[in-house]
Length: 336
Image 1: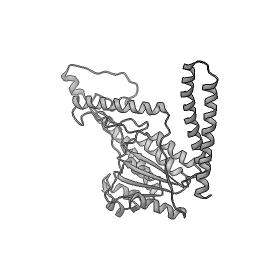
Image 2: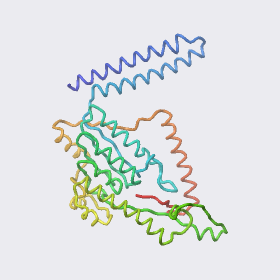
Image 3: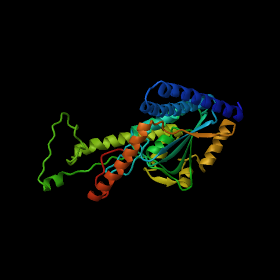
């Protein structure tokens, strides 16, 4: 199918969908209702139906007459399940979350035009299981997959990259941090100073291990460190298998980060180059010129409104928190 044929087919589908939607909306919401107010409301509803029809026609046209052969999906910011901030005070909105990113990769995989996946990574890492969900989605993509990092591909970001066929980085990119950390704050001394006490009823010796505000005893410390060690072993084994690397080589990094050049020398990165260079590699693999389509989250108007409200709430809450709390004093127990 030529580009001209695809463009003509897409245009035809969109026009037909627009005409049918406009006609249906006009009859249902303008011609049939009685009264000026009802007609005014009908015009608004008809326009809404028209826009919905155009959007539906566009999606159908994209599927029937694809104008791309490479799907691009971005992973940016700290990785969490739902896109919420993993720290307190919040450092900023991190949307979309892992579930949204997985949905975009799966949607690209189902798209008839997407013969390859270009995964943009600019993330310091984040939660373990959400990172692995994205890695699995990339690994399951039916076609060549190339990940490239702009600024940072660390920790959970590198975990994700191990699910792709290749990882590209810039000379100045920060790559690595193959490790896991858990942190918590304690407030027992503070509670004593202000005359407060804390008591909680639990069943199971380690049910409350690491819970605020009590201090950690040696048995709890060994237990929690064991969880971190198990996560680390899983991290190393997953990356070693995905990148066909010796686990001992990964452990020797001691969770260090490297600039792109040294990461390439150590085998943590396959090639050095820009996004365009990564696209050139996909062209070689596909045997044809690459046309990239970015897959963005599918959001309803209500979800977009909620996202705007969340940004406003974040700005307000972060301002209050920064004024009341010392910097870095409130890190929650979490894994990176």
